[in-house]
Length: 456
Image (cartoon, rainbow, N blue to C red; front, top):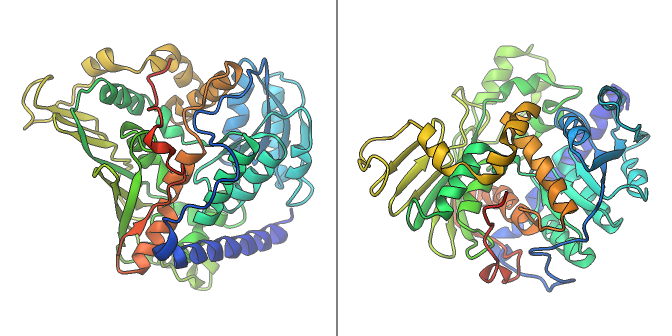
């Protein structure tokens, strides 16, 4: 696409996406807990026939998607057969990466906004990796499943409750996987804490804290391409937690959300929106387009989730203020607590026995509680990279499950529940922080869902 056409396309699709989120939020106070009738069979624990080779189609190979080109080129049993992107610059980069690894040349598609449907029509594509701007996640994942492919979607899975339900319904009707690729669940520390929780180290779980605190104002300088060219506009159209899943995914797995417990309701509050306007005034000329925008997304959003079993989770979002990166990653139980950034532990029984002081010496904890999956694949994951290895390990695990007829670690219900924080938080902020109900995307199956095991 030309620069002008690309900007026009992004502007139009952003407006459509924002309108959908706002429409979803407008009704979420009254019927967000409504459960529609099922259109198919539950896909909880879905197992598909083992694949000798997993043929991969990639939609979107820009800032995020280029990493997937590297990872799937390195994983035994995976073969990239088709790649689609409307930006020929990044498509050429992907082609160069494929050549670098000496892999078979895939088919390339770039003509028009819906060129990805040509990729979906191919018979030599089993799974589709979707790493595009957020507003495209829902239609592309739905189209992929309707074409008989398994959909793997970058975060968030969708932007509105309606679209989340649509992906759940489509997955159940087609019996295809629709996994939101929450890579943080495959980090070494998050896997270790999951192992600690499963072994009862912290006692009965009470409370968790999750966050995405990551100063990203510099992305506002990306105007014609890259992430800031489309993500910045969300700060002018929504006020809530627009990116909840990186911190929330691991805490949800610790608490067996959708597998014995589920999110019940949420309340949310935002700080004033000051930082991006100030940054624009400082970094851009007065007549620059970034100075013509009205930024409404609160610099810091704090949401509190209550689960059906009564546990609480604090979820924060802040991509604006000057502060160090953090996902919190805190889990509190009746016997003690783990907290991340930096990693530290305090226990009543076990450890040092002094819960009034943090134990920050993690080596002994790694030696005792490193997750078997990390023990098996951690060195290779770190070598191949992607946020410390979590990206590669996630991709490897996806391929492993498909080749060995095992259920995926995350399913469409997880992606929907974790992503639902976005529209529900927007609705709560707009309604003086009154609580908003989570839909039960599992339609009651959470009550008998099997907790995620310690695999590997």
